[in-house]
Each structure stands twice: as structure tokens, then as C-alpha cells.
Length: 338
Image (cartoon, rainbow, N blue to C red):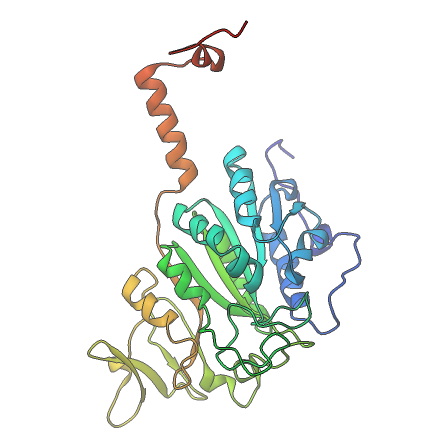
């Protein structure tokens, strides 16, 4: 084996010796299992992976992956991950966060990570509730949501994570569901393969404090009418027999029945690189008359922050020459304190 060859791994190589301490039945188990299944196939030495989390149920994740990692402070995982990536750009850096950690106390940090486009992968577990602190409403809870902190119903309009990511000019936005395990594996691979910040929202059921939040999207009898599976270059169809589609009436999306009046040619075709279509799709969430999109909503190639930083440093050195830190400190107005 050459020095640069990567060891062949199995799922067991990415499973730590720590006891998994989520509630039985939690959707987090599915995310962990699919991540551990996918990572052996990525062709990366496991010492080059780093998982970084903040605070919340999802933030236990680094303990259960047998890789390097940090369990950091509330809402600051993205800031710490940025420092890790800039100090060692060759690392594959993953942020694991939740709808509270990543969109409430950490919301500002998340926005700036996305707009800067560092080559970091964000996995946001969205269960629309605060699970670790026992069932308060979160930034993604629906209007009217009755919780321990909103006994008469939430008055807040919820954040839509994918719309937030689009507004922050994220270069990769995708969504999957904890029970769609094969789909989740595909999305994790797509996120890893994207050069730039990837934002993967995962609908994750909290069976203790918000059980069934995504039941229409996972129940056998309803999911075909409630989930829109996106495939690049393919028409946006859904339903048991794929007989329903999304089309534009002017600038307004509508649901049509494919048959006598409307044909497959009338249905909107998904284009991952089209910002307008992606923005439209992200806004279908919380709309009761539309299915909820899963898959890659938006993906474009754009220079990463760390590459631009290296280019800028090299340009400055070429223009001004290399210099030592000590000489820089001694330059300009200095004085001696006696």
C-alpha cells in the first residue's frame, strides 16, 4: 500500500465506544446510522474528519462518531468550525446542529457561515421543538404550536431553514427525512461532494416532545401526496402514480393533475442551479396545499472563502514581499516605555 492510499473502512470504524444516549425511537439514531454507513465510502482517512456541535440533543453526535470532534458552546459550532477549516483547509469539517442551536442563539453565526462559503458541511436536525430542555417551542415551530413555553399557542411565524439558507446565498441547500434512509445517504454524499458550504436540513422526529411532527411526510397513506422528490432535470411530479405536478401560473406555483388538461410537458422541471426556482421550492414549506420538497434544492459552484483567502495572501506577498511578524510590529509609530 502506498503512503497516500486510504485504508478500507467499515461502518464499525466510524462507531465510537460511547453509549448512545438519545431517547429510544429518536430520529437522531437514523441520522447517525446513515452517516456511519456512508463515511467508509467517501475515500477519506477518518483522522481527516472533524465533527463539531453546539448544544442540544443533536450535539451529542461527535461522541458517537469515531473521528476527531468538538462539543462546543451553544450556537457557536459554526464559528469554531470556521476556525478549524481556515487553520487546516485539508480537513473535512462537519457541523451538527439543531433548529434551536443553529437558528436561535446561533442564527447569526449560521447566516455568516453560509454567505462566506467555507468548505464546511452543515447538518441541521429540525424537529420543530426544543428537545434537550424538555419541549419548548423552537424557531421552526408552527404558528399556534402549543408547548410548555406557549401554552396558548405560538404567535411566532417560523423560520424556514431552506429559505433562510437561500437568503444567505448558500451555494448548496438540500433536505431529507430521518425515515428516508436511502435518500439521506444520497444527500450526505451530495453534501460531502460539494465544494463550499453545504446546508442539509434533516426532518427529524422527536417522539417524546413533538411526536408526529412530520407524520404526513412519512406515513404510508399520505407521504406520496405530501412529499415532492426533487431530481435535477426532471419534472416536479408527485402522488401515488406521479399524476400530480407543479407548474407556474405566471409567477405563481400551482398544483395540477396530469391528464386531459395538463401533460408532463406543462410541469416545471427542476434545475438545481436556478436561484428563482430554488427560492420558490423552499417557500413551499408550511404551505398546506403543496407537497414539501426533499432533495437538492439548490447547488452552484462558487469560490470558497479559504481559497479566496489564500489567493489574497499570495497576492499581498507578491506585491509587498514576505515579512516577519516582528518586523511588522516594529514598523510605523512605536515607542519605548521606560
